[in-house]
Amino acid sequence: MCSTSERYEQETLLEEQLCQATAEIVRLRGALEAIMDVCADVKLATRIKLTNVPEALILENISLRTLLRRVDALKFSVRAQNGLRHSQIFFFGDLVQKTELDILRIKNCGRKTLKEIKEALTEHNLRLGLKFGPDFQAQFEAAKMSIPVH
Image 1: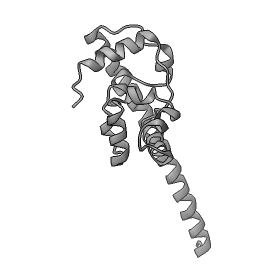
Image 2 (image 1 turned 45 degrees about the vertical axis):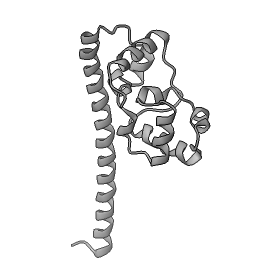
Image 3 (image 1 turned 180 degrees about the horizontal axis):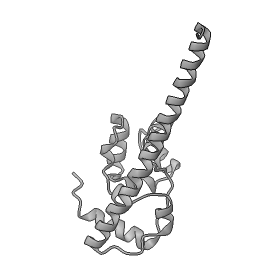
Image 4 (image 1 turned 180 degrees about the vertical axis):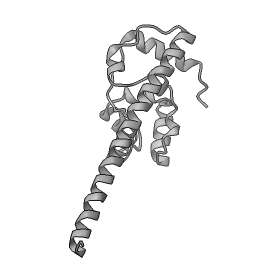
């Protein structure tokens, strides 16, 4: 028969294991979403004849489909939304090419807004300061033109 302290220790251990398992599930879900994005890119690339996606983007699990998502899909504060809209940043691909300094130069965007943006991008496995090769940049811009901004 287990004492109360032994039962408490067992429950604590089970809770820790559950937390670890949950974190692993979240990590695997993100990896699965990245794989699904790559698969969708293959279909999109075939449809709009995109070729030679840079290896750096594939290695970072960033898909054209992800980069073409609208920034307003991220639930930013009104200040951040207004700043990004005023700066003509409408898509994830536009945002991830900006540096921290670029964001801080946007009117009314300070450290708090920068932190908010970085956290939101991290949730989508993205970050600021990405550089696209000229070929991919041209493909991104061309694909962007087919999506209404407003």
